[in-house]
Length: 419
Image 1 (cartoon, rainbow, N blue to C red):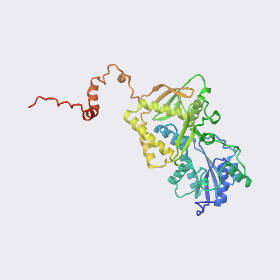
Image 2 (image 1 turned 45 degrees about the vertical axis):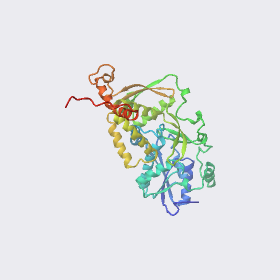
Image 3 (image 1 turned 90 degrees about the horizontal axis):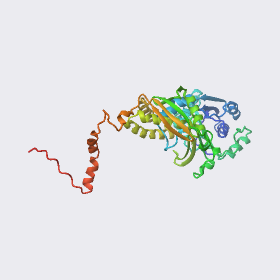
Image 4 (image 1 turned 60 degrees about the horizontal axis):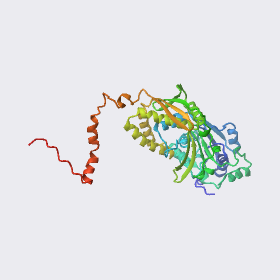
């Protein structure tokens, strides 16, 4: 078995553990191949999977202990909401649900490793995906001295059947959900992703059984539902005038959006490792928040800031997707976004209807939109006559181009009447 870490002796490893099939195999595999103590670390990021019975399962697999952390509040406050304020969307569609949780998980895993005196960390990401990069970028930035073990890049296990056979040969418990599993899913508070199986055919139209958080727009209620989202300095704080903590807000919007079939995305995306992959994402609450936030920015940000922010948002999305969270540039961009968000306070009304989000109202004390300026009628701040000189200068390059390239005679200079 090829093992690029084989020269390293590891005494204690902290494994990012979910209790699924892969991580159930990794615990005994680490003990056999590295002869080390294994501590399992599980991050509750709102995946909704049953965390009860997990400790027993980890110990039966051979772990010395299980550490569980509830990270939902921190995920919202320090990761999701900064991302919402930035306006980051990857490749026009993806609201970065899986990507945004990874740096926090890596950070807490490293903290546990340092606390437990471990000399290594391990994860169950495959050698083909983005997540291995995201986790290991986190490890590298926060504790480069730790050895990183990625079993999927070392072992001979190639399929679910191999993994089940591995556990059965050692009389180890098999996780309950290990029937035929066509679709690979990742869920957290922000979204759920679906990949693999029939979805690998980009021409395959996803069937309803694939979706978990949203009803199909066809089956959504025939009556629209109107909601109002309140923001303070770019951060969502309230629903229909009622202040909610970040976790409650997202959970409530997930349920509302899901009911009306909102937030489905079908995307062929470019992975960091160079291949294209097809994913189905459901982000009901996130879609509502991102839409409302962008709408509020239209009335509270000046043109130059809004346009420039869009350019940086694309870079920020790329950095989140590529796992570059713990970097000086991401911190610098956050400072820029925080500054731009100072006036972004107010509320947006939206109608939820059969997969659609229809804006029905915008309000802000900091609004730059003034009907008395925008009106086609007379305004004290805007004189129609001023436009002539402005257009004359603004169109000067076009006129010079016409003179030079179309042979139009250049007008003679005006006679000033001086000698």
